[in-house]
Amino acid sequence: MSDSDNLRLSFEFFPPKTEQGRTKLAAAHQELAQCEPEFFSVTYGAGGSTRDNTLGSVKAIQAAGSSVAPHLSFGGDDDESMIALLNEYKDLGIDRIVALRGDMPSGMGGAYQMVYANQLIEFIRKHTGDHFHLEVAAYPEIHPEAKSFDSDIEFLKQKFDAGANSAITQYFYNADAYFYFIESCLEAGITQPIYPGIMPISNYHSLSRFSMNCGAEIPRWMHKRLEAFGDDQESIKAFGLDVITELSEVLLENDAPGLHIYTMNNAEPTMNLMNELGLLPGE
Image (tube, rainbow, N blue to C red; front, top):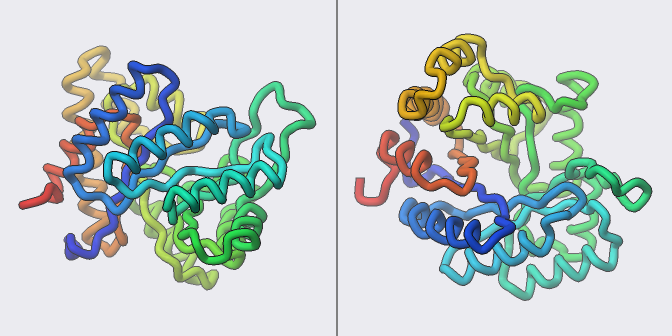
């Protein structure tokens, strides 16, 4: 396995909407902070619909002592609102942003600006210079709306050419997809680090639905195995842990620069993975 001292770990949260959710997130953060990730990221809803919740979660995580990277997309915001938000993050001491095109929200019609990620990066660089380390999204199994594999690589290159520093991938369960993608990126002149995204498996039905929406492939053998467990949640979790542990080991043994874990605001699966990988402090 790669030298663990040089691996970058990051964990992703979504902003809760209720007090109960905020309490759960605080507890998950407290536990996961033991793993000493480089940063926690906080997602941003379609059209910025979770903007205030994202900002609140970012402040809470930062106040608890962790580095945090808000996700950001234009959505329904105008230039002035976006500049104000960027300046607020700067004033808070935030120095990393995950810059995304964002999803098209329902019901916004003409109020929504489809600002592509490379345009957002250009905007951030124009108004804040090099203050922020900018992360972007990458898709080893191709973005659902991409015309072709090559065009998707070109879109990623445009993000880096605009000033992005590194990328985080959509989750996947086929290591070969990631390695082929990295090889293709290098051939296209992309040399910036691309961190694989890892999605723990704890609920088959929600994972299947989510994967269908975002274009992440669950291999047929995994589908069949998970289906066979039915409602046996403990077996699903044990199988899921084996799958993502082996996937993570293969990635790290073949020089992936780190891991970005989609925690779904639940500490246990990620802590179990860190334990299996020997990445808990003191190990």
